[in-house]
Length: 220
Image (tube, rainbow, N blue to C red; front, side):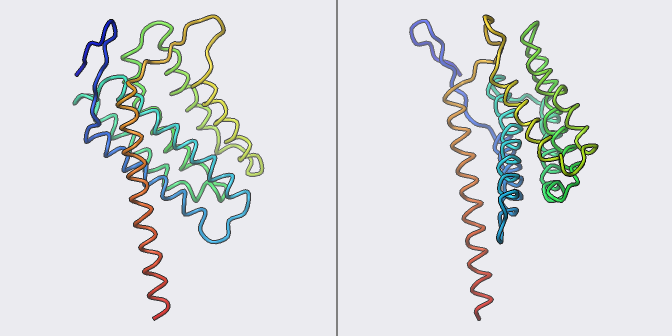
């Protein structure tokens, strides 16, 4: 739905059930990451958790921006969204193996999460505007598939380089050229972020209650 204000058209878009489902799947990935901080994590574990959280955020922003720009996902696009969420599930399973130096499961899940919805990005872009989703989807994913070949002592640096590359592709544009980034709907994005934060906080409450119950059981 849109409303004309002066010469500007403001689009009102509400968060749908498919988007809420996606947020729930991403919260599972975040919850798996927080497990890395249990006990007495070292500096390396804390740094890895922060870096992996950034990567999960990139994947979340990818589907969030997609639904924002397209004004929702139609029936033909939903199987691709579900495939992307399956990738997020695989990614979540690969968090702990990645910390142990085995990145293949995380890498495969991340590639599926990012590239499954790439056809939806591509179908909505033309000309130069298609270059960003091409690089940010299959382009970076091709590099991710090489991470299992990286020696374990260089894996952290490789992941940091990939995260920096993704951030650069998201923010940078050629000098003197107009940005090809899609125009986002501000109200929808704010609502989506707010709902996602509420879901994360709800999961945090569940974990706190479970921890307190475990402590109470141990004391009795």
